[in-house]
Image 1 (cartoon, rainbow, N blue to C red):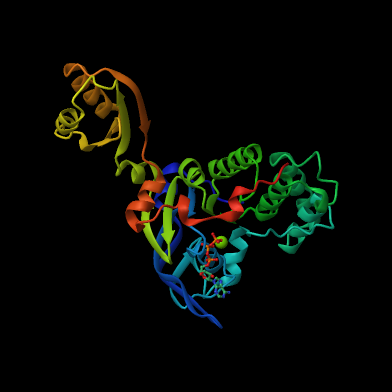
Image 2: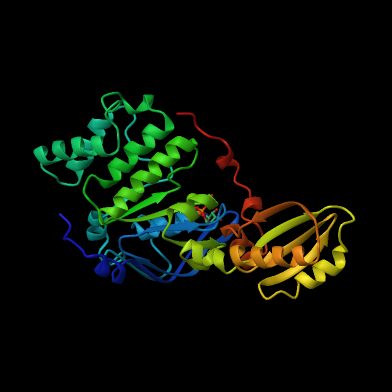
Length: 340
Ligand SMILES: Nc1ncnc2c1ncn2[C@@H]1O[C@H](COP(=O)(O)OP(=O)(O)OP(=O)(O)O)[C@@H](O)[C@H]1O
Ligand SMILES: [Mg+2]
């Protein structure tokens, strides 16, 4: 069993520390630099997201952190142990749910759990107890006595998470855990991961869903082309970027150019420009900024027909750092959802 940790200790401790991580692959098509010098610190007891487009290096990083792949250079410490000098000890302290999953589809869910526990050297009775506990916790009871081949996408993913935590790891790694899940199964899995975090497990996951990184993760590392381009709590990363307000005045009710110029001089306004019949304003801090904008519009007698507000997203962060939109980076696999 894991020793009890106070919240203060949890914040101070690091579950993962990565410095100068490099990995390249050579093949017929030439050399690919998958990781080009990655530094990361993952605090214990948090959900940490690796966000990045296809080919960014997320899976490569995860495979190195979980001892499945050797780095070319750099230092990786997981759960207090160096992965290159203590791979076996690291493996006992971590769980891994891969992009393709590791359940035996010809066995039942419960059999899978018991087998996994035995593989980790747990005793028969303890394994049986643990299997039943996980069946309850991850809501597997309705199907755990059927063979896994018959499971829906969401059911299989839940079983895989249970398999990843049978041996009570300190750190759970998941590669694209919600890929292809429908919204209900996705929300359910998010809840399970939050509960794991709340009971002291560090959860490190990769994703290329903006909302997953934003809403589920306590901290995010945005990865592109083998490098971390931004890192921190999602709200902090978003907060560095302006919110966009689009104002539609009644046609002819105002001199748009004069109003836009005046808005541009407001303290919280980063920029204001005319776009067709609308004025677009970039604001630092949506709430206070909006109030200032409306005061000015009212004072100038501008009749407003419509307003829309777009809060900054992690895509704005990605765009700012890379010059590309993560949305446009192309993820064919994410558009299909597996029905449950
Ligand atoms: N075994 C390998 N041999 C050659 N190239 C590889 C190998 N594994 C990964 N790569 C390359 O390394 C780069 C990073 O791949 P990686 O799988 O880490 O990306 P990813 O961020 O997980 O992408 P995705 O979102 O598509 O899963 C890619 O260019 C990929 O083609
Ligand atoms: Mg991947």
